[in-house]
Amino acid sequence: MSELRSLGNLTVEQLNSDWRIRRAVERDLQVLTEIVLDICQRLICLAGQTPATTGIEAIERCIQLGALTQYDAYRKMVQLRNFIVHRYDRVDVAILAEMVNNFLGDFERFRTEILSYVQR
Image (cartoon, rainbow, N blue to C red):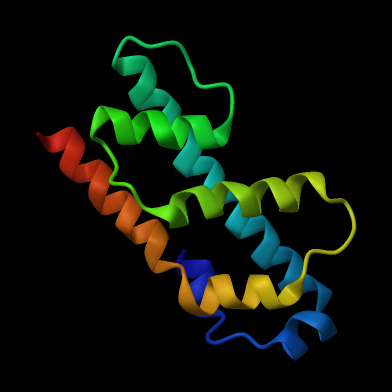
């Protein structure tokens, strides 16, 4: 997240004109979401359950465990990750800019909720 925050407020024009920044943003958002999913899968396994078969299922099962609250942004993270990974042409830069500019706090919220859960 510190890498993404270091870019400052991004514009669509910046992301369209600099493919390096665009790719770095895509990759960092993908990696952040992969971390979210890996943590969810680990908590699911620690609860004695079989691994979730999809990212959305992993989020939903962590909600059922009480590790996460019902928060739509977690599902949207997974959807964005799937879009980045499986859509091989260009990702809409407006969505990337919006994520970096307005929604990095969702990853911090995830971290806070998980830390609270494991400390109980």
